[in-house]
Image 1: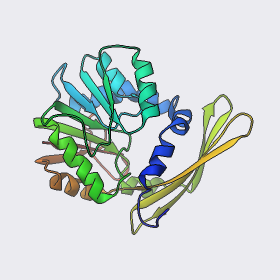
Image 2: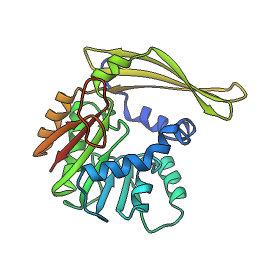
Image 3: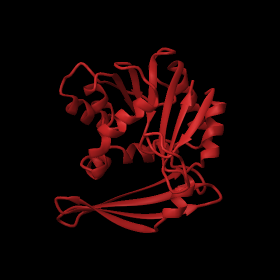
Length: 252
């Protein structure tokens, strides 16, 4: 991997497939997905039953509860395996709708959505310029006064909680080991994840992601054309601090 830069697209395509499903499909954080999704649309002031874009949507952890709550939810993701799992979970219901696309080139007309959600640290894969391009494209499909909600790990919190390695028990005798490094000058976090199954077989993926400060994200949102952006410490609108995950609500 190139020093000081996020991983190339082929790295993410390899990560966000079967490997990601095995690591995160039954992750404990998925149990919180309904609460997170409904709190996010409330923070976005989305009208009841409104049009909501989940971008990227992964296997639908947030898109599906939004649709069950009566929103016209659409999910976009680059990964076909994750979308296949999302559609399987949707079980043929009319909503949500899913489509495969890069979030720098969304398959929607201008002003199609009342709100957009970018949750679970879903920026940083592309680097500053291309992530700004993705934000601009999300803004394009929002209606006037529509809001984007970003929920992400900010740089200060990463530094405060940084651990070079740890492990998670996934169930069925499986382990996920993580080894990490952080380049503070470039703001790049590098992680090697290793899945170990009950028989001891190992499968590893390494990737590098850009970790932003709130100041950097606010500047990117301004460049992307958002009129106003506010920082919070949670999806309920609590105060932001250096010991909290970052939630930004940006108004189109």
